[in-house]
Image 1 (cartoon, rainbow, N blue to C red):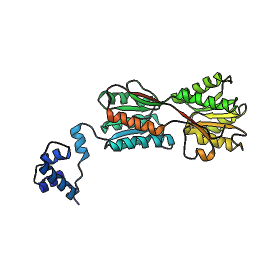
Image 2: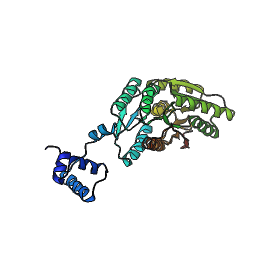
Image 3: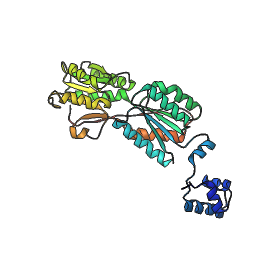
Image 4: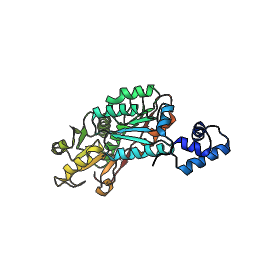
Length: 315
C-alpha cells in the first residue's frame, strides 16, 4: 500500500498542504478548518514526516546517547532515566554502544552530529570531547556523564566521597588490610581510590595495596596478589565486580568470614549474594541529563550526585 501523504490529507479536508502543515505544527488556523484536517488525518492514518520536519527545523527531535558498555547495570538504569524524560518531551532516543573503543566513541559522536540530534548524552572518554564541543558551539546541548569536561554540561558522582564511604564502612567492620582492584586510566576510579586512601588514613589505617587491570582476564592474578597480604578486596568499578567475585569464590573463600569484599554500583543480584556496594543514582543521573538537553541552558551546567553505601554483609 502507498504511504498516505500530506497531499492526501489536504485533498480529503479540502484545504491546501500549507494549511495541513500549519494545523499539524500548531499554527493559527480557524477551528472549523483545523477540525476537518484532524478528521482527515485520523481517517487516513497519516503519520507526519519527521525527516521533513527536521530539514525545515535544521535538526531532529531525537536525543542521541552514546554509552561505553551496555552490559553494565549502571548504563541500563541511566538510559531508562534518559528515555523517560525524552518520551515526555516527544523526543525519540537514538542509542549507540561503543564497547569501550575510543575510535568507535569518536565515530558515534560524529554520526550523532550528522543526524542533527536535538541533544547528545555521552559516557565516552576525552577522545570525543572536541567534536562534542563543536556540536555545543553550533547549538546542540551536549552532556557528559560520570566526569566533567570544559565547555560541556556534566553529570557526575562525587567519587572522592564514594572512596570515603568505603573507608568508613571498612573501618567500622574492623577491616585494616585492604587491597584495591581498579581499571586503568579512568579518572572516576582514580578519585575513588584517592578517597579510599584518605579515608583509611583518617581512621589510622595503612594505605591499601592497589593493582590496575585492563580487562577481566587480568583480575584473577590481581586478586591472588592482593590476598597474599590483605583480608579485604575493594573494587572501584562495577564493571569488574563479577570477575573479582568469581576470583574470590573460586579459591573457596567465603564472605565475610574468609575475606571482605566491597564494590561500586548496585546490580539486581547483589542482594542475593550479600555483596555490599557503594551505589550511584544512575537513573536520576540519566533523567537530569535529559532534562538539561530539553531545557537547553546557555551556560554549562555541572551537577554532582552523592553516593550511597548499601551494606549487605560481605565485609
